[in-house]
Length: 120
Image 1 (tube, rainbow, N blue to C red):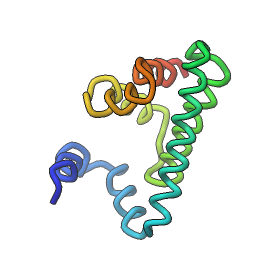
Image 2 (image 1 turned 90 degrees about the vertical axis):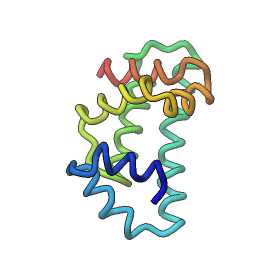
Image 3 (image 1 turned 60 degrees about the vertical axis):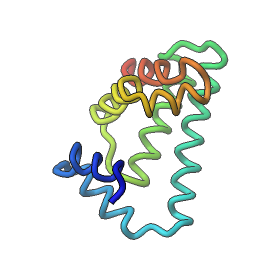
């Protein structure tokens, strides 16, 4: 088992979200995973647009991005509540791997996504 997989099980293995995600993804083909990635990337690009254009985190565009973000997670992995999305937002700025991913797109994006999600 990969180190990342073990970490996920240790952190969230007992949660409903993890069980739902595992049940769904166990049936996915490579095409399904590719489609999920496209949906996730589309949501990220909405954040990039809002951030890159200096829009406030509570702007219509930033809020549309967070809705797309939550919808992509709910569509492909587990029912992502606002509360769950806020927990993810905290991880995006506190876990260096997530921060690096988002800030690698545009420096400061992780904090912007965090702030937009918490502003809802």
